[in-house]
Length: 160
Image 1 (tube, one colour):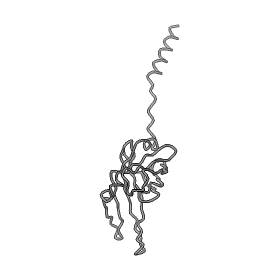
Image 2 (cartoon, rainbow, N blue to C red):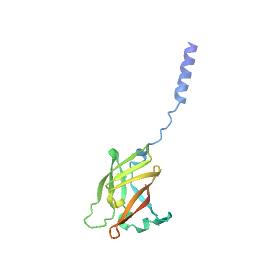
Image 3 (cartoon, one colour):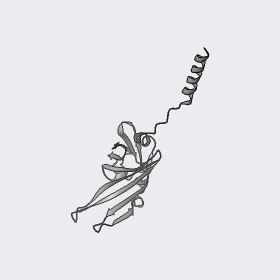
């Protein structure tokens, strides 16, 4: 009997002492929920001589784009909210699609046209936490007059 009581008390102590380790949130879980607002935007133009010219793109954005927010939702759908409209007929918001892939190293965003000035972004995630999303992607800038194009590396930072 004493052995049984001792065994059961030891078992009880072991069960109460063991805590399940917290599993870290996945990249998808960290990005979902809340409004993400752009806080920084840099353009890195790669010059023919091998040098790079960096421009603060955030200061160049119109105010009606600076206040846009992105909300990443379940089923890889999101909402681009336009808090101040650039044109009177603009919708208040539009739906976009997104995905994180390559083991959380890359992100794709489709149809958040006003925020990104293009219909798709395919970038490398530089940093992702519950309150910070930073990624880099390439944008091809075409000059139809001179029939040339330049590749610009864009670094975008969003915060909740």
